[in-house]
Amino acid sequence: MIVDLFRKEIEFNNIQGYEDIKDIVRRALEAEDSYNLLFVGPPASAKTLFLLGILESRKGVYFDGSNTTNRILDVLEENRSKIICIDELDKMPKQFQEKLLNFMESGQIKVDQMRRQYDFKITGAKVFAACNEITRLSKPLQSRFRCLHMPPYTEEQFLEISAKVLPKLKIAHVIGKAVWDQRGDIRDVISIGRLIRKNDGHEEVEQILATIIKYGTNNCTDGSWPTQ
Ligand SMILES: Nc1ncnc2c1ncn2[C@@H]1O[C@H](COP(=O)(O)OP(=O)(O)OP(=O)(O)O)[C@@H](O)[C@H]1O
Ligand SMILES: [Mg+2]
Image (cartoon, rainbow, N blue to C red):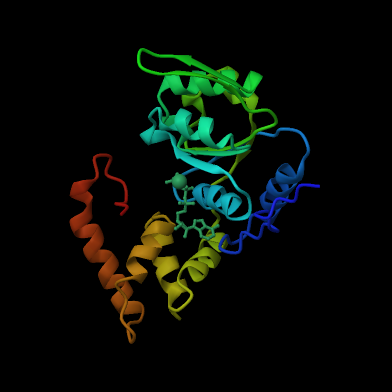
């Protein structure tokens, strides 16, 4: 019997909540047949954390769809990975989305280019992908995935996650609440947390936030809360 030494119980310890989604991902990983999961959600909703968590427990490959090149084909040809994680799938050029669709239908990668030909097959692969905007994917590609739509966090969840991402700060919830009130996201909580000094309290958090908002809006084309 061949034992996959890399295979570990998948924990997702760094992800707060989403116990139901964690269960689905574990089951998808254990499933005998191929299974394709797509995480869809707003920025900072733990989609990338899920993809990285999968790769901590399984041997696989990770690609950033917004930075796609033929390297994807080279890596797949070389590794023949059966766990394929694609982040920012909606930012992946259409030509690669089409190649992915063909691959998900047949397991076949057949590409004829001027300088390089690819013709290989990976059977039983599982594709885990993430995107913000599902409508940027073609309907056929959407239909290849089981989609998990992650709704924006509630205030209660947001405060719990703030405490999780700033474990050393007693005032994590103060920062969380201040950012929540400004409709910021968890990345803002983290970046403000990094500026906090030992004895800072409520007032300092408000002060830092006010300064960031005051000088940050110019960087935003849509007038929304500035992110890192
Ligand atoms: N449920 C959560 N538990 C723990 N940390 C979280 C959670 N949600 C968000 N975060 C924090 O927010 C940050 C962003 O998370 P992540 O990169 O997974 O977001 P994303 O959904 O991939 O966003 P994007 O659409 O911008 O790529 C991470 O550094 C993580 O620490
Ligand atoms: Mg991401």
